[in-house]
Length: 88
Image (cartoon, rainbow, N blue to C red; front, top):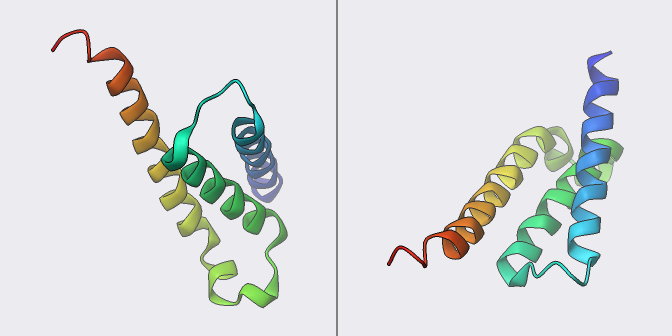
């Protein structure tokens, strides 16, 4: 059961990242596009788990957590840039 939940979560994350990167109205800039792409790639690896990736396929959960952390930093930077300019 937990594997199906993990598969569903990775699929939702992959679809969200693809939508965010391909959406022309959402300005992700370079760092955001790289972070979203990194999360999408790790989500794809978590879903497929290809043997050709070797070590990276085995450690894909760790890489996914790192990717989500990078994405969280990007979100924080975007929020800080848009909300804290007025206070300075």
